[in-house]
Length: 325
Length: 315
Image 1 (cartoon, rainbow over the protein chains, first blue to last red):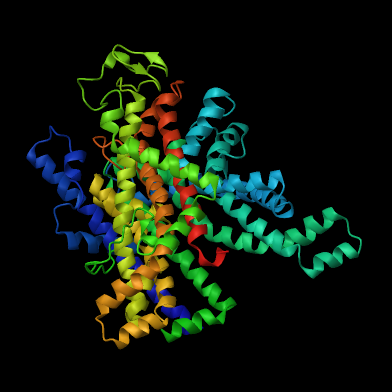
Image 2 (cartoon, rainbow over the protein chains, first blue to last red; image 1 turned 30 degrees about the horizontal axis):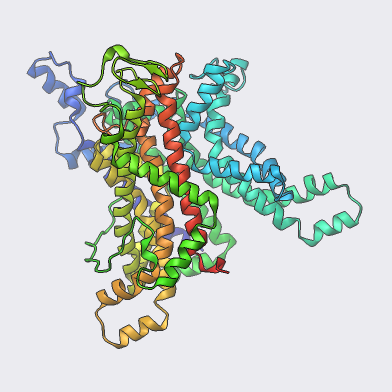
C-alpha cells in the first residue's frame, strides 16, 4: 500500500514537473510581450529597463529555474497588465468560479436525480423518453451555444434574468459571494444552469441506470411486501442506493466543472478565473496564463492522485496490477 | 503533451477513413447487409441526408451562395445588421446581414466549409496517428504497450478543453495550430479503441497463421490486423468529428481558435454575440443553428453506425 502510494506520488510529481516545463516553454516562446507592455513611444533605455525588470533578457532556462524556484514559494510571477502577483489575482477570482461550480453541481443533483429516477421508473413512457432525449442533447450541444440561447430567451426576449456580471455580493467570512443577495441570485442562475447541463445529463444517465437496477433487487420487493408506501420505497430505499455512484462521479467531475467554467464565464461575463484566463491570453499576460494553467493542472494531478489511492484502498486489484507492470 | 509519435508506417490498405466504405467492398453480401441495416432507422437516414447536404453546401459554397462574404467588392457596409428577409441593394438577405453588411446565409456556408474542414482534417489525422500508435501498442505488448497506454491514460485524465487551452495558448492561432491541438486532444481515444479491439484480434488464429508464415510485422499489423479492427474505429471517428467541430467552435467563440481570416461557425457566433443584447439575434442565432444541425446529424449517423457495426447487436 505504502509502496503504491509513494510510486503514484512520484509519478504525480514527475507529471507536474513535465507539465510546468511544457507550459512555461510553450508560453514564453509565443509572441513578444515587450511590444505589448512597453509604451511604443518609450526610448531604448526605458525599454531595456523594463525588460530587465521583468527578467525577459535572461536565457530561457534561467528564467525557468528562477520561475520554478519562486513557484515553490508560491510566487508565480507578477501580472504584466495588472501589476499584481499572478497567484493573488487568481485567488481573488477563485471564489466566483467556485460559486458557479458548486451551484452547477448542486443544480445537476437537484434536477438530475429526480429526472433520472423518473426516467428509470417509467423507461417507456413519454416523459421518460423525453428526459433521455434531453440528456443526449445535453451531452452533444456545445456549452457556449446553450449559454447564448439562455441569454437570448431569458435576458433579451423575456427580460427575466440579467445576462452578465455577478450582481450584488455580500462578504461571507471575508469572501464575496453572490448567492446570498436576491440580485446576486438572479445573476448566478443562468451561468450555473448552463454549466450544470453537461453534468445534469451525466447524473440523469447514472440515476436512471441505478434506478432500473435497484428496482429489481430483493430488498425493494421486501419493503413493498412489508407494506411500505410506494413513495417511501422510492424516496428512501431506492434513492439511498443510487446516490453512491452519483456522488462518487460528481466528486470526480468537480475539476472538470472548473475547467469548463472557462466557457460559461466568457459567455456570461462572470468574473471568475476562466474569464481571467481568456482575457490574459488575449493580452499576452503570460504570468497569469502560466499560473492558471499550472494551478489547474496541479488540481487535476491532485484529484487523480487521491482517486487512485482511494481506488487502490477499495479495490486491491488496482495496486497489484500496477506492481506487476 | 509530447507523446512519442513514431512516424506512421505507410498504410497499404485502401482504408477510406472518412466514409463508410471500409466495411467490405471485397464481398458483396456484407456490404449490402450493412447498407440495409443502416437504412432501417429512418432518423439515421435523415441525419445522413442532412449531413450529405451540409458537406455539399460546404464544398460548393462559392458556387451556391448569393455573395462571397469575404470579397469586399460584393458587400456593402450600408446593408449592415439588416434583419432576415430584407431586400438589399443587390440580393435578398434571407437570414439578414452582420455588422459588416455580409449576407448571413453566405457567411454560414463559408463558415461550414471551415468548420467541417477543420473537424474532418483533425479527425482523419488523429485517426491515423492514434490508430497506428494503438495498433503498435497492442501488437508488441509489454513495455511498449504499458508506456503508450500510460501516456494516453494520463492525457485522458485531463478534460479535453484544458488540453486544448494549454496547446492553443502555447501554439497561438491559425488553422494548422488548431488542427494540431485537436489532433493532440483526440489521438488517445483512437489509440485506446483500436488497442482494445486489436488485443482480442491478435489472439485469433489468422494472426497466428500469418506469424507462422513468417510474414513481416508490418504486413501482419497493417494487412491482417488493421482491417479487422476498423469498425469500432469508424464509429468513434464519426462521433469524434462532431466533438472536434464542437471544440473548435468553442475555442473560436472564446477568441482563441481560428483567426478572423478563416471564419468558422464559432467565430460567426462570437461576432454576433456582441449584438445579441441589442436584439439583433440573427447574427449569432443562425450560425448557431447551423452548428447545431451539423453536430446532431453527425451524432445520428454515428449512433446508427455503432448499432449496425456492433456484432453483439446482430440479429
